[in-house]
Length: 586
Image (cartoon, rainbow, N blue to C red):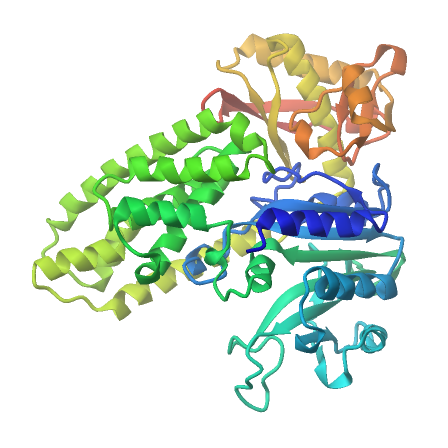
């Protein structure tokens, strides 16, 4: 069996040999991006560079990025959906373009991953009023050996990426599919068909346009290439599996579950998949500083842990020990690639144990509530699910014991109505796009550097940034500190920041090695996310700087542009983490 590590190394080495710099995975929590909860793709942390900012590692980049996507949580349980996944990605930042990119992709898939060229089909953008049909990509594919009858032109909803928000870089893409069965389901069977015949194995995005606020698509002076390839899916296909969970990424945890529950995976696929997927996602999320809560990122984490516990509860009376044992398997297995799992293993296991323990009590309350219900119907079952997290499967089991029948359609109707309300709220929350680099958010971002240093001056050097969230209306800054700030401490922090704004200190950027920057006193919490060559932003003169941090931007040219800030709120953001909200005053 070809291992996940084999695929990671083959991919990185392939592009490294073609002059791509290997950059580390960014954290799962996006930096200064309020519009998404987690890093969803390899290109996500690179938005500033796709918009034109020079990357310290150069114009050709490659990495394996850890990602979490929350829109597919309810789909997990089939053979290929995941919440946490690894994305193999490479980029050309204004360097090579379609000819080189598609040639690289074809060579990788056929020579390195060893897919049969005769099994490959591709799709290209069909063209519309905004942009022409992508005949160029089609011609390149034909020159590489893909015949015309296996090249399909599809509309924007299938073969176009972006922009990330309302405006910004975007363009056509070209996707590669493997024909798994060679059996057509009908005259319209083609890549993208839901029959299961075709499976996507690669996607090259050609960011050649900038969508303006007026809705026009203008050509970029330097177009970019963004390629993303899912590790889990490709690993399964390369090994000849139609089930991702049969690969070495999952089998150690699956085998453990079989031993713990005395059940076979083949008879309990959906339940086993949910347990191992959700617990793997949970340990990575906790390792990146997120704790279970009832809001935003913490709510997603809580939901993942509880869904795993619900499934375990079907097999064992106490899910605590199995949850921790599955977590231990993934920590041991993936720490060589992601060392933060090992360094944070005590925190991971404590956080997981606390949440599983709390939810076990919730389940007990749900059972008591179940026994109070006089009329058990689909709506009552959904109320149990929504209010107490009581699973439909357990409700069914209890109903059978009481010789009652339940109408699943009633439950599903309530569930879909709840999902629609959630989606509507999510669209409203995240409609701004991936990253807003307006003038006002640039001011807020620079202000976080001043705030960070001021907190260290007032509270001590133990203060470390644990996350930030910026909108056009305020900044939110999380930092390590155990006690609530006094009003005097808050006032002092605010005074220091505003004095540095009044001083109108210069903000300068330099590129240097990470080791050199750290030796000069630059701050870098989440050190592992930065490549060997980094961008360092210094506030103040080089001989007597006030703040020096590794950062990707964006920043003002001098602190006077910020205008001033006012701290409006300070609160707890979890064990040992405090949170400050601040607004610009001018």
